[in-house]
Length: 113
Image 1 (tube, helix red, strand yellow):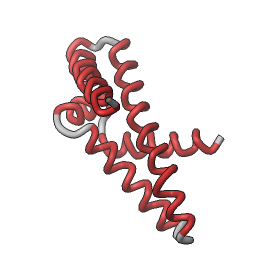
Image 2 (cartoon, rainbow, N blue to C red):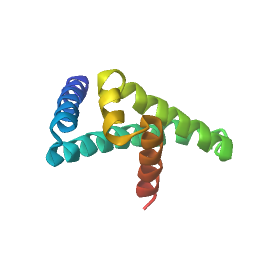
Image 3 (spheres, one colour):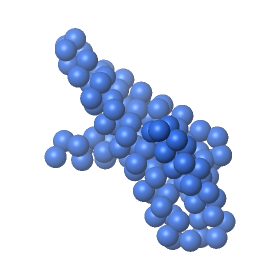
Image 4 (cartoon, one colour):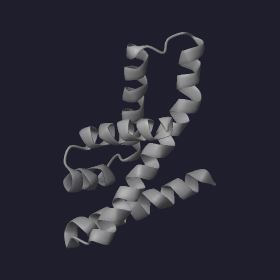
């Protein structure tokens, strides 16, 4: 069931991104931001609950461990935005990898509060 919801969100997000880029609709750009935030929030929360806890148990939560988990988060989000969706997001926001990396850092800080 969760996979069906995710697929639906990806399809709706992709359609929204395409329309926003083509017609410049600010509402669709806001929808694109919401979709990206949702994906980033989901990935960061998942990794914090699994990988981060395991790294702390193994006493590997240092600068390198933090870099590794961030790289893993970026890769996961990029895979979720693979294909046409990724291309459209990049055309709207610029460098996809840099944008995803910044969103992940923002989400991590948000989760610390």
